Length: 446
Ligand SMILES: Cc1cc2nc3c(=O)[nH]c(=O)nc-3n(C[C@H](O)[C@H](O)[C@H](O)COP(=O)(O)OP(=O)(O)OC[C@H]3O[C@@H](n4cnc5c(N)ncnc54)[C@H](O)[C@@H]3O)c2cc1C
Image (tube, rainbow, N blue to C red; front, side):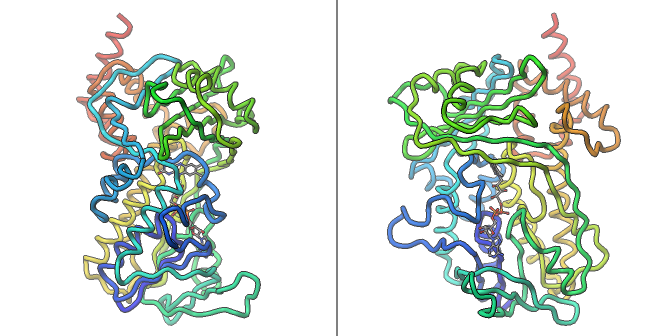
């Protein structure tokens, strides 16, 4: 390829750009926020308008960490050297269900850091590749020629739409996130829009940063799942992040969303059945105000089901699917989409044809992640569907495996490998796992 253009310079866009740098003379990353790293490392590292979820807790799962390390060797080591926490789930991730601690297992590792810190490190590494450049501008649409996308229309200023510029491109990657306008762009070019599926979950998120006296903590990462007396599920997570700070998230659904303000935030921490949160509310000092975020629904776009699509265009990251964020799958999914893109480009298929094999592979990744997260979401009383076929049976089996994971280290580890995106969800349905889970639950009863 002579030139590839990536729309959106966040996690998915940067990872796609890294892959493309092996296949194109020039890769341009078009981003509407001014994210150019300037001078010292502190710049371009704060929250930004184009990524409104950036102030919320973000953990990088083991599956994503390993893939990013493949594309950018030493990425995780650099993050940790600069202050991110590496949590071994066997030692450091304390999981409590209703205040009871899950059995410890030998670890898979995940990274705890603030989202802007993680993204700034990724950007710095990706932009250091010679044939890759950042372009500051807002995408307005695509240009089409014959059966393919031939370029991107964008404006350099945000006030004057007459300032439109066209960038010719051999391949365009849409990584503009959940709010992508790709459906409109396709429609404008006379192409069908992908089918969109959604599941309403009505999740409320609030995150705050804390400072703590040295040594006054027992967990690098802790997660607490509890149910209120009237049956509503609550989730709290805390983690050490760069700068010796602690990030804490509390989440609730429907009319149990956490409210705004520091008093309510601290009260929820103090009421948590897990000791790690109560201790933090006691000894921690809040930095600034807690920040809230609403996630109304999970959403996916099924490009692989279309029967007509232009060549020279693919989509990645949240454009393909965005899930309930409590499972932390988004950045790792983007890393897996990047691997699908690499496989497609290495296959030598002609760019004059639509990238069906890419969409098929990326669709399989989305299917697996969607299954894991929506299966859990569908167990919530206020989530009404749509329920897939066989949901009741699968749900009973998942309950059994979940219960067994409280006390059986082998089952807990297998569950972690799925939730950390190291193995596909279907591995939990293997007869050996189910038999072992049934025994573990029997022993608990005894
Ligand atoms: C509350 C919350 C918590 C989350 N927690 C986690 C977590 O713990 N772990 C995890 O892995 N994932 C988490 N996620 C998901 C994660 O944020 C995303 O999956 C991840 O950022 C990948 O997104 P992306 O790069 O596809 O899109 P985004 O990060 O949304 O980025 C889109 C980019 O496109 C740019 N853009 C948009 N439109 C235009 C345009 N017209 N022109 C130019 N540029 C444009 C934006 O400025 C932005 O830079 C969470 C999400 C939410 C909402």
